[in-house]
Image (tube, rainbow, N blue to C red; front, top):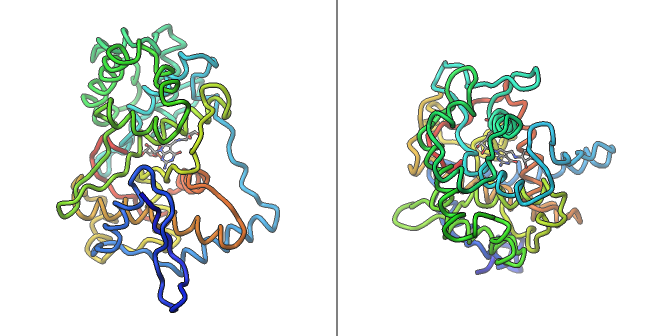
Length: 345
Ligand SMILES: Nc1nc2c(c(CN[C@H]3C=C[C@H](O)[C@@H]3O)cn2[C@@H]2O[C@H](COP(=O)(O)O)[C@@H](O)[C@H]2O)c(=O)[nH]1
């Protein structure tokens, strides 16, 4: 596989030079970007965003890459944490509510949390209350009542039934193939980030985030990739979190990054799609619109990475991802993110 890069060529035309793409994500999403009819990447705005970030850094506003947040993540430095993180990311999707409905929230340590933070804190709260969520045997047969208790709060976590199935799948596959320990999968793949993502895609069906666009497969693998990034983050790059080729992961195509990129005018939606998203209408999961939004998000970030690299500023997709995602955590003033009901992100 070879990465598609965008850069001035001898004859002045923008050519696509090849670099590595071991997960087949850049290549398959590039085909969507080239055909997209609902979403467009604005190259000038990518250069602007890159310059804006470089100016911020020149003024000493280097973004503090957040250390792993221990407040809401279970972390005991052992293989139990690795299994807990796998469960976290098996359930790490779709936290938004129906149009004009309040989001699901939980109360934890005196704080009311929603979204991803509510999911993480709920799973940490459960461990603190004595539920062995790191235990594959326990997960394999976990009941709906127990999952409901874990996520108890105001309202109901969306796609509840899917979360029960995904939790059981984690337990079942860990027992069947990895002696109940996901650390065995890390060892089997020799701490290679790319191989571990591919193992998740192969062995854990709920992580198989691959769409079909005009008859062709399009690979996103968002939760498989973020699982590796989260294990790396939780262990501060040491021990179970020490991976090779992590720089070859792409950004994680969720629903917040497109919202932020659209705010920076990097992503442009056609007038019909924009109206539907701004009206918070549901976008069909697997639709051309949804796949184009996700594929253009991946390539906008790849082109941003290449632009920054050309300006002598090396940065990984995961670092771009974290910076954009954190911007999306204060996105109340932004136009809405797209709403596709799916367990993939
Ligand atoms: N692209 C990308 N998407 C990410 C994350 C995270 C959290 N991870 C970091 C957080 C702490 C640790 O440092 C982890 O590294 C969650 N999500 C996605 O966002 C959505 C939830 O958003 P809201 O509704 O606002 O809670 C949902 O699709 C969820 O899957 C990320 O990092 N990147």
